[in-house]
Length: 362
Length: 209
Image (cartoon, helix red, strand yellow):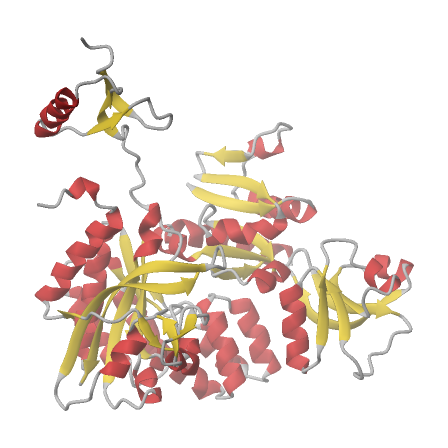
């Protein structure tokens, strides 16, 4: 029997997520800690951080400690018509920390749905992302965007690669003032600027955003957006799911729906995901894919209450104490459900509820 | 409560005036004492002064929901925040300056002294120019005078210091002004309050234009 109180918050979350994902037919995916270094070098922009810990294996091959799980799942899978590979994972990955700039071991949970993906699969993955956040906190939000819609609107005004990349950056920052300057530099007419800048204000309740999108222009992907919105509105978590077209990801890898999740009292997004058909193509896979990763290290700030005491009893003894008496006392305390630490002197930092000094007892 | 980080100094004072005129005043901020945080419970806001280069850190880490930071700081540190509005104050330029007689003929590695190493690197990478960056923390103008560097990359407001030291602006990298930034998570959880504040500030800036 596992004592819940001994588990860290992220461990508890990780266990509940496993049972959640299994309910929807996602199977656990276990993999080696190592992967060929070349895989990451070829796809370094896909990684959160492009630096990896590399080493030579005994056969001389250059290997890396995994900084990412998705690439390995894509690499190992195969394309079978009509079949979907549904997996979840809970693995340690090794990345450079954004704050210390040193390598760090990070516990990451996530799931991937790869194969003949349709709008239902996207809905299912987003719902599971929302349910994953609900396991962490009641107060959370999922923001959904659509890369194809954003790209369609921008490229209908100007499809210069540099222009698109600069505009995407402004949209992701909700930065209308610099967007205006970029449009001026590229001699985009005012109407074109207005069309692109309207993407910045596309956030809020799903229905509200759909109405705004209809006003921008005739966007072919709006149908999928409406279907997804109808499906999500049918769930109990619909109030926690919004559209926000500034939630973007790298266009070289992601397409279609992308999303990210926030929980209250955590300063950054704790979940990130979306469709990554472009990445699949780069790795010579024919299937489509959608998935997400939950960064459990980022929820470390939650549930930080320290227990008042480290142990219930501190048992002090010395070399003259009868060992049988000591052992009986320990058994008596632990059998009553309390915790005990046996010591020969009082440790300075140990916080205990009660002290029993066997050296003073007769 | 909406937590607001303001940059210490003249710019911060000017920005606070904008907040005050927009109805987000906090009278205790003008009291002369050693308090670090100033609250107006009725208005649901709290202000604190931090070093200008730290504002984006406070906002990125959501110690502040919103803040005011110069575009120079945002480009240099690239914090993951929303850049919601150009306040149009604290206007200056990020520029390349050198001794008046200096000409860059591109024949050798250019020695660049600056506090803004990322901005300088990005700028010269865009030009395909090979440079040697010398990171300094202050008195940047001394570097070309003493031969430590060929040029400097720094903020130029009036150009008076450059002129008095026989230096001049050679190129303007980009114009700088103060931006209202917000934490991405806070924007979700305090969206209405943030939007209301931005709309009031926008109105104030547009009125003063």
